[in-house]
Length: 405
Ligand SMILES: Cc1ncc(COP(=O)(O)O)c(C=O)c1O
Image 1 (cartoon, rainbow, N blue to C red):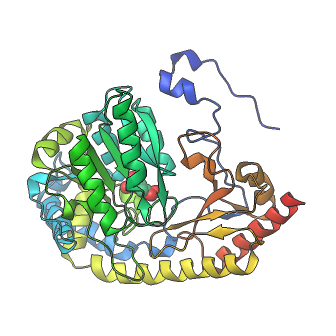
Image 2: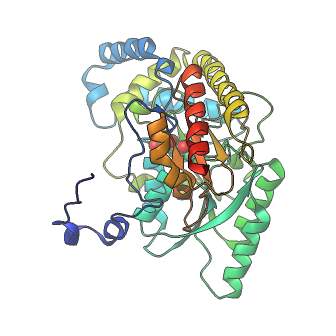
């Protein structure tokens, strides 16, 4: 039996916290992890992927070279090396940004939070993909945003649905959304990538309806096959795209380092809202890491590791899942989106699945609206070994069959 929740302090919580107490949906803190179950739950990199030795060497060099400067507010010149390393990566993807347009943050989530505090008053309208990354929903919700979901399919956000939402709001005399939050590359949770043509239409709509696009590119460098369309920022000549990046998936999430690229007029203000300063010591270490040329070769190893895992999961789904199931086949990133046969509710299935030996995130948690995604789940292939992925998918299949009986 679970302990009843201690509610003595509830009246002291902010209203956004009070509203989500005990909620099952996207604000749910119910952890689906279970001991001994294969965790297909979170977007964690696989542990062997971390470049421990290179980070250790970079840390030593930073302390030897810079001593106290590396530990002071603002850091030393290795922080600039990181800026230059990141700007070079951005340039290779067609983004021509200056140092003034680049803001270092403590990860993409921190970046999103800084963007929210720069632009949003409580009640301001924000459009998000339906479904979208559950943690970003929480960040937006924390800032009191009024969220509306826009449909997404295998080619990413649907611009027709976006336009229909904008038109309907205009016709009803409702305020235009200030922000559209989108994950254009290997979207979390579906794995979808926004097509080039759609990128152009989304940019046109932003100009026409006067909103900003927050493009969260956590996975863009993790493409296993095929060609990536240019990032939204590379196609944007109106300054409406605020691009979020992170090294969480390409180096390690524990270093808590990400960045923002935005038009200077926006970057000036967002920089002031990244309150509390940023993690300049790890930025220095990463500056050395980039400068020593580790980033690209490590990326090649990562791609091979993730592709192997994606293939193992696709192969296991094909062999194990019952008829009536379907899933996406992403060409990169960490996740795929599975839809189980009619009659399955993935939130209800979860305890049974955990008993069989697998956990995942139920689909409903990725939607703003209740009652959507109930047959679906996000499966992460990033964290487990190919053997464990196989065991996890087999357990999901057993649990589904038992549930349907
Ligand atoms: C789309 C997306 N944005 C941001 C993050 C988190 O990034 P960070 O660790 O840099 O905060 C994730 C990872 O889970 C993600 O999937």
